[in-house]
Image (tube, rainbow over all chains, first blue to last red; front, side):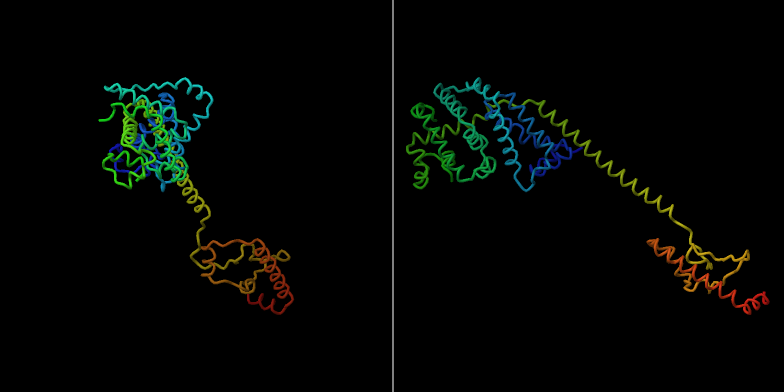
Length: 190
Length: 189
């Protein structure tokens, strides 16, 4: 029996065919790398709904197990899995029922902890601003500033040219700055 | 470097002229620059505020992967069984079609359908081999013909039989007409 430690040095792209063949240790390794990341992505994208994020995380791995042969080993696994995740989020947004749920979950459920009251208010404001962003802008913001993905990777995931991604990031930051303008003078800086 | 990368990685006083001009539209003053910097820091820190995914998700998925392994093995076993059956079948069929090859020369007609003795008027007439088999093959040729599998042509075989029967008929007729020869043969015997 091969332990998960044996697959530590494997690239993501090398683990996928092993999962297709049923190697649980290879699956554990890939899940360790992407399970929480994808859950976080779904959680932020899908209105901080934990159950929905969990379901989506499970679904995306089921897709991976069942359709691993669709993965092109020459391409980046990270880009591939995030593009599937992004499409799943789009589907969730399209669902009417979820739209209703969205209205109910508009209030941020994330607890913000900070000693400084100004800092606490600022964090809440940032959280509300990102949560209220429309779907595409939110995806861009999360991929860039939460997942720290590069512009070419985001371009592949969202299927948008790199130049457009760069300009969208620029205008997104500008928009956020305008929304948070009131916090400029608060004592939130070290 | 992108505008957001400059904001994340550098401080206001570290910026050179080129960098300042590239982010001018986004952050013209130090206050704006710091606001954006703090906003990106808060966003990055938000990762820790996300709850952990439940362990049962991984357990269920692992069980699914394990079942895939079993079904994957099943294909291999089926393929191995099919190959073994094929080999066994091939050996069995080969034994069925195999015939012993005679090691001595036998003066049997090359064509099995060819009768060696032609009967006429209730009297058996032995036809000499050299007459009956004008195109007699050597033993080696016969052996090779028997060892090597050859494609049978039913039309050719039928033609051979017809040709041979014509030869028998003409030979029998010639012998019966040659009365002197017949007497001589009778006398000798």
